[in-house]
Image 1 (tube, rainbow, N blue to C red):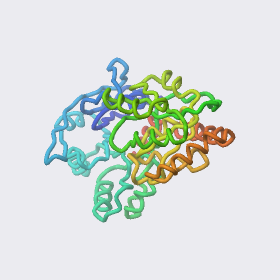
Image 2 (image 1 turned 90 degrees about the vertical axis):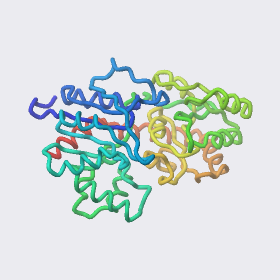
Image 3 (image 1 turned 45 degrees about the horizontal axis):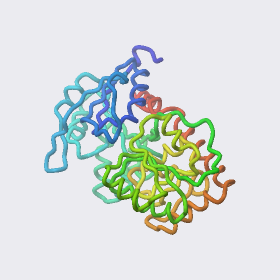
Image 4 (image 1 turned 120 degrees about the horizontal axis):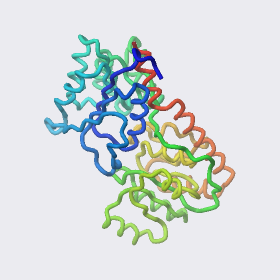
Amino acid sequence: MKAKGDLNKILVVQEILPSYRVPIFNELARLNNGSVTVLSSKTDLSFGKNNPNNMQFKHVETEWKKFLFKFKFSSTVFYERSKCDIVLHVADFKFISLWLMLIVNVFSPKRLFMHGQGGYKNNSILSSLIYSVTIALSNGYICYTDYSRNALLKKLPSILHKKVTVCENTLSVSPVSSINDFNTKSIFYIGRIRSGCNLEFLLEATRLAKLRIELIGAVNDEYRRKLELKYQGVVKFHGAVFTEERQKEIAKGCIAGVYGGDAGLSVVHYMSLGLPVIVHGQISKHMGPEPSYVENEVNGLIFERGNLNSLVEKMNMVANDKRLNIRLANAALKTFNNLSRPSMAEKFDRIISESK
C-alpha cells in the first residue's frame, strides 16, 4: 500500500460500465484507499449486470445528452472533477466533456489522462492533428495495446512520444490452470451478438468443417430459433453467461476460440481459457486492437477476412492436428498470463504515479 500522501483521488469517465471492468476499478480503488469514482451512463444488460454491493469504488450514474446526433455531454462530469485530482477519461472525441477538460487542463494542477485505442484505424491528416493537439493538452495517452501505441506514435511529433504509454487491455479473470485435452470436435464462441460479429458466417464455417460450436452470448428468441433450425446439430446456445465457473465449464473440451467477424476482448477471454484463437488478420477492421495479441501459428491462427474457405481451413488445422492444438493452446494461456501481470489496475496506478 502506498503512503497516505501518495494516494490519488481518481475520477474515471466512461460511456458505460461493463461488468468486466468492475474488478479492475475495484483493485484501483484498493490501491488508492477507495478514492476512485467511476462516472458512466446506465449500462446495457448485454454487458452484464453490475451489483453496487460488489463495488469498492463510488459509481456515479449520469445521462449523456446528445448534440447533433453525435456529440455527448454531462454537467455531472465537472461536479465530480472538482472533487478529484486525476481524471482518466475515455479517449472518445465525441465527448464534449473531454474537450472542455483538455482546455481547462492547461491552467489546472489536476492531471488528465486519456485511455483508448489510439486511432490506429484512421490515418488521415485530421486524425493526426486531433491526436497531436489533445495529447499536447493532456498529461498522457494510455493505449490499449503495443500495436495501437506504435500506430499512434506515427501520427505524432516526436516531442509528444513520451506522453504515450500502454496498459494492455485485458480481463480481470482467473485463467484455467491447464489446457483441455482436445479430444472433442467443438469450438467455442463468447461475445455480444452484434453487427460485425458475423455469427452466421461462423456457423456456416463450423458446419462445413463438420464441427460443433458452444456459443455464449445473448440472442433473441426468434433469431436463435431460426439459427437452430438452419444449423441443427451444429450450434448449442447457452445464452448470456457471466460467471467464470460456468464459462469454463462450457469451454472445457473445446479445441479453439473462434471469432468469424470483427473481434475485441473476446480474444483475451479465449486465451484465459487456454484456447488457441482463430481470428481474421485485418486488425484495422476489428472492433478493437486486442486481436493483435494473436500471432499466427504461435498462439492462434489467422484467416483471411470474409473468406469462408480460409476459416474452414484454419478450423480443420486445429481439429486434425492435436500436437499443433496443444502447442497453440499453451502459448495462448501464456500470452494471457503475460498480459495480466501486472494487472491493469497496477499499470494504471503506475502510469499515473510516474507522471508526477
